[in-house]
View 1: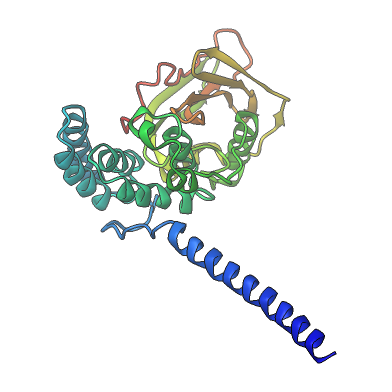
View 2: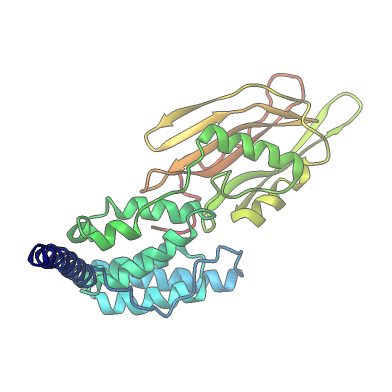
Length: 309
């Protein structure tokens, strides 16, 4: 009997020992294969707040130099210039993304992953950041790392992209409220939007005088200024509208949102490299009730987009 009890307990302890060893091996394997933490980079998180024109001018020059260096294979120069541009303007999406590419092509992919992680952290409030993550998954500069688990982890997207119809509807609402939800309206923080900024009518004895001014605005604050003249009267009617592809890479929403003396004729969106359609033009037309209504044409060819990719 004693021998049987001893054998039984030996078996129990043997099983416990085997399980303990298995757990230790699994823990060791987990530590061995756990991804290394991303390096710290000397660049603050994304901040898309408006910048002063003088700062943006400096950033454009640095971006131009960085773009040239990257194309020439001078990756260290591209890193230096892109980092300087992105540090000057924390909302320069192009500078930050070019920095990640320069790191990847220059043999420092882990630093590039750290930059992409900044886009990932900001994607819920920065649609341009979401777009760059989507673009990276298609970008040949990152091709060598597309199957790398670290790259896959930092380019995972969770944000929901508004459709152009939803974005146009949000923009129409903002005309009345005077505040723009840049995320919902698909407004890029560093690309210009063509806006028919001021259109008004003067009624004389037996004729109309129509005066129109073209303006260019950048980002959320600029659009708020651009639509300020149209907030004085509430929308009288807002017909159901459709959005259509006017040519490859462009969508136009024929909204016909009527206001006193003026209407938003259409809203244009231009596709980015990541597949997101960003606002490119708001086209106003006068609404005088007679033929020959003048239309203020927007940036149909995309030439008004400010920050080159």
